[in-house]
Image 1 (cartoon, rainbow, N blue to C red):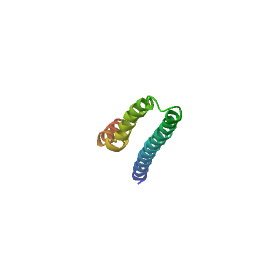
Image 2: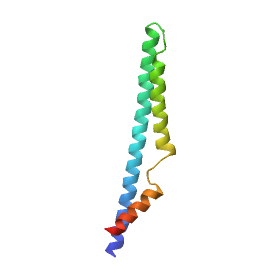
Image 3: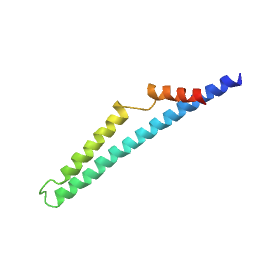
Image 4: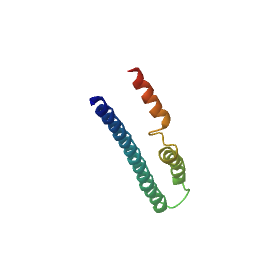
Length: 97
């Protein structure tokens, strides 16, 4: 009977770890998003108040935006957390222990 409780507890622990990992991914993403908008807003204001010549801020906006796009894809589209492959491998490794 204790074995069932341990396996259930382990399952709950795995769920908790997966949920915690997901929350950390989301937290990292939203921090990245807020930083992107805050920094680029400041850069645009600097550009505007220093004569609005060549729009150099577009380089930062574009390349950082490209990175943010892939971060978005990684968190929301290609989410690897809790993938079936990962679960199969965990069970496979546990069989050998």
